[in-house]
Amino acid sequence: MDKKLLAMLACPVCKGDLKLDSDKQELICYNDAMAFPIREGIPVMLAAEARTLTTDERLHKA
Image (cartoon, rainbow, N blue to C red; front, top):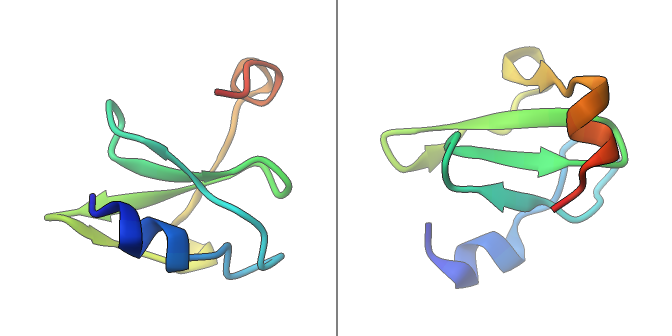
């Protein structure tokens, strides 16, 4: 994912920073414990499409 695009994106729920998990192709919001998928190179920034982070994922912030 382009670093300039990532810098412009914010969590749609809390407007906080997102971290890229390139292995899982997700954008992570640790404030809301949500992971937004990236499909075919396009971030899906819908809360309904996000998954909830596990407790382990929340504790091991990258």
